[in-house]
Length: 321
Image (cartoon, rainbow, N blue to C red; front, side, top):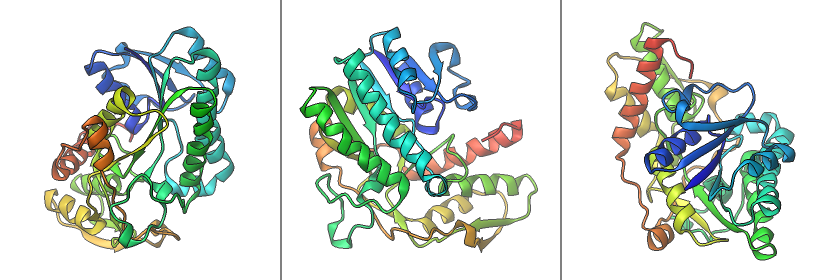
């Protein structure tokens, strides 16, 4: 099938492009002007790429006019919470209006195209412990700007299904990590710092709050779920992509430190501590397992080892994150 991925140059976008190519798809992608495409180096010759801003409705319409797509995977977004807090207006422009532009573009240019909207488990916000594992019918209560924009897009998408008859599936991935993740996300931050220390940097790992617990999956499992949802998910429905258990951030750090070739001390950096932090969250996979048969397959230890080795390799070659 022919697919279009927005945010192809990003962490999940590049892995999704690889997965779709491996499954025999023709892959088109959008990239933001000026962004690096280092995540796509190994597959650039197999992609059709278009540069533009998803917040511009004219850009997306022009891409949709070029070819008929079976599926549009909308991944382009501002996902790093501190970045979103610094630029709330831009975050709504990208996360909400970018998604709206996709829906409106499909409605007017290609109404038979299936749309997969990548939302986030952050839309659940600070849920009560007794609500765990979170099901898709749990209340939406986002506690940060990035999550609020994603929640708003979910609301905006519903009339496109009910009034216009578009086929739209919403994915709510919980935390995911792996090779190519930006080092300002927690697992990748730990991995990069360890890799730098192994190369002679000061033997200090700077951390934020290590007490929160999160539901972690491998990004390669997540993108496999995206494609399965695009093929089999029920239109108008939201689906968790989760492991069904939470892991303490301290345990993530300890696992990576155990893989290290050097010793380092741990220091708390106040700049890395979020003002609003959800203490514990993990999701139910009952619905997605029942509807499409997806469940995560990659052990967390392998994910973290692959992430650390990716940082080691890129630093040895002088590549940017």
